[in-house]
Length: 133
Ligand code: MN
Image (cartoon, rainbow, N blue to C red; front, side, top):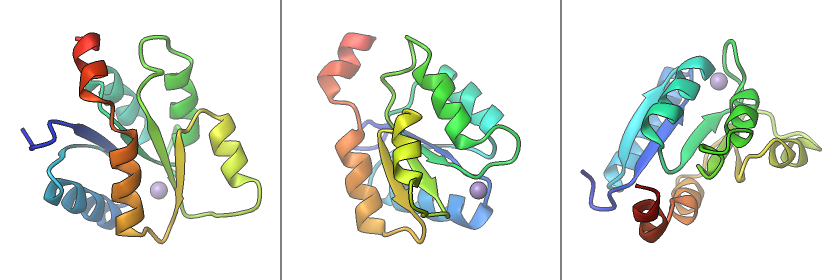
């Protein structure tokens, strides 16, 4: 258990990015779960109820946006915060991701401090976590 007792699920197909996210979150005290595609991410989100999910949008198979839409359409899963990560920061992207249910949006290249601040902001309060048990 990390000192924060928080679990972050990272859904990312790029090994180097996965390693980077894993290492920075673990160094900060988070428990880190890893999924390499949308299908595995969806399965692990249901199984582990992480808080929050770091979701790469460009994934093989089911996209990160599609996984997010499924999560947000499920009454038992929609409270899990989703932070979208994308390489394509184009006009209209932010609106598209937020409309799709993402709680926050970060464009690559990733700023470590921005990422950690966003994770910290969206991690569920301990009280809400206890109530959910
Ligand atoms: Mn990707």
